Image 1 (cartoon, one colour):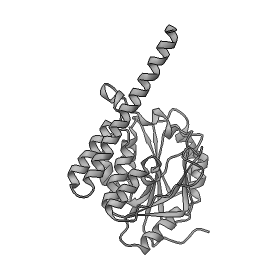
Image 2 (cartoon, rainbow, N blue to C red):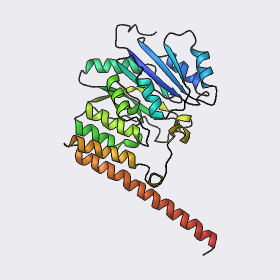
Image 3 (cartoon, helix red, strand yellow):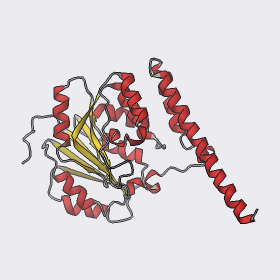
Image 4 (tube, rainbow, N blue to C red):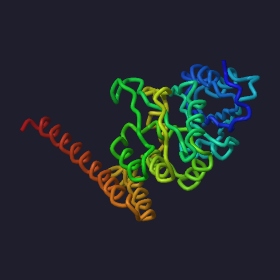
Length: 291
């Protein structure tokens, strides 16, 4: 039974979709099962080439919870996210991708946790991965400590921090980020995570999970729509590293050194990757020449 939370804070559930028709029936079923009543669900169909819009329209017709938008021009992911958050009316927002699955009780649990802890600004679910690419056990981030502790926890677990981007957070914080970082770049979600953690404490729920799809459109190259040219072909993390350095110089406190180190490690990782690729190509050439 759904909770009668009509006097509780309003939550905007934001669903960006591009070519997700195969996942839409499961997603709508998931959204319909949310146990918190005072929500609005905003879906933005980003110029899909499949029947995503028709599928959504068919499944949500008659429900006052849903607002559907169709984008006539293809948007970058960041633009589609900004489109949604700028139209959200809720006090809190939570993003969910069409091929991911979020626990039906997450919103209720997250708001209860925030009610009990007046200083926290967001709540993150434990995360699992459809194909167990990061192991079979749920990943839980501990982000409720002091500022430096939160940052170090993220840096140590950055590669499994996906759920942090899909947390339930105050709308104004997410809106500010969306408008300050309007362009898409690889690692934009990590920059969001850093900005969020520097703003305040983030709580974690063990009971609720988000399962990340690893075969869907949100993981594909087409979804990113980032044209890597010139230097960015070899240093794709450069824009992210640059922004992390900008944050470090802006903050100038105990987080300065960890952020600078994190940015440099991103670039070093790119260089190592390029050297590995180069070595593999050289080996292939040597094998072909029969030396």
